[in-house]
Image (tube, rainbow, N blue to C red; front, side, top):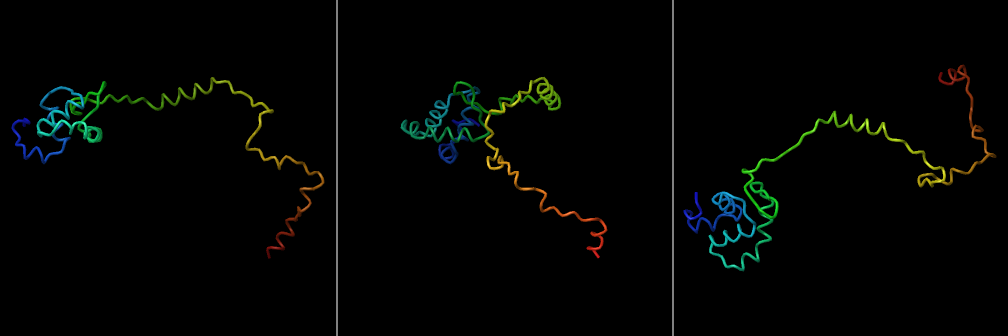
Amino acid sequence: MKLSEIPKEELELMGYDDIAYLVLQESGKKMKLIDIFKKINKVLELPDSSVENHLVDFFEVMSTNKKFVMLKNGFWDLQSRHKADFVIEDSDDELESEIEDTEDEVVEEENPDDEDIFYDQEDETDDTDEDDLADLVVIDSNEEDEQNL
């Protein structure tokens, strides 16, 4: 249905995005956002100041509505006129190439002079006076069986 055929009362009940859809559909070509909004204002017989005051809100409506697509240089068009170009790569081939790339890399040795920020300095002290095995108790397997009874 053409915009000129729709009564003004019905247009006033429609959202800006619905009217924008009709504008783009009727024009048959991509348009700048401001031109679409000016056409909406003209159809609704709104003052020119409305364009300046509500253009940001109109942009938000257009960008969140999946019926529209923003093109290069600020042009907008109907999503139905454009197909999405998706490139799906074979993940197995990609994984193999990543593995091959890492196999070819030279592993750099760490410089022992580099400070290790995760190394606890307190563990570095060597307490030779303390015997780590002093509290160790050796239990014979026969003694263990007797304790379990």
